[in-house]
Image (cartoon, rainbow, N blue to C red):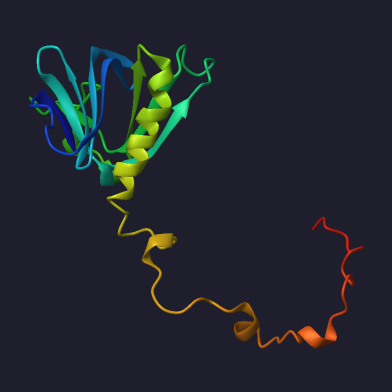
Length: 177
């Protein structure tokens, strides 16, 4: 659960700070503020100090959206597991979150920078910081490989004898699978 409240912007490990960025939370414009991409969390604050911070494990997806048919401006799209609340405990849609199953709930956030040229660097900084927080439940992660390399020939019981192959014997093979 991420709260919309009065917080201080991060000061350590900030990889990208993007001023003049509008935050749109589930279709509702929160206003123009500053986006902070820090090593520990992603944060956005308006001029009054109100804002929110997202821990990277709660972020299920982030991407640059250039599809102006889906949203009128290019932006950094972030999908968060769970609902955001204000500091009174109200959900972003005004309903009570205590009666729902939060596992299946997502929140969409769009960060729309005034300078669209900064989208690439915002996305890159997010990728770098997200990589610092791998998902412990991700079984397909390439970062958790331990042991020796997987040898297909040994695993399948197949052996390839280099002496038996002729030079150029596969040149006319159909490449399409």
